[in-house]
Image (cartoon, rainbow, N blue to C red; front, side):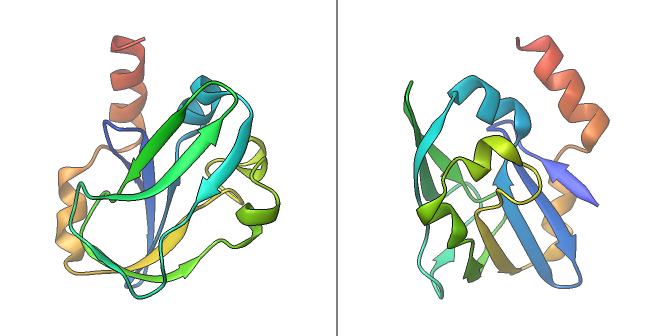
Length: 123
């Protein structure tokens, strides 16, 4: 199950562990990603907190936590190969894995169809 935010982050839940990254739409707007600043393992974020930064040839953008949780793991592959965000924004280009404070908070996010409608209405 994948959910989406209006800030173009995605979150996928497997058990209690949530994987988070930016959407394919977001990476296409950014262009070639040249740097990713990842959070620290063990850091806790509230929903809406900035937890990472992605820089492209066009701009730098903050990445926000879709829900509250603690960082369990980061995708350290992005440090040496930030272009993975462009190649697989919603797969291999994930940013961090979180242990969620409350999985029920995912209910506040958009499903794929709602996100696609949001993007279409705001493009």
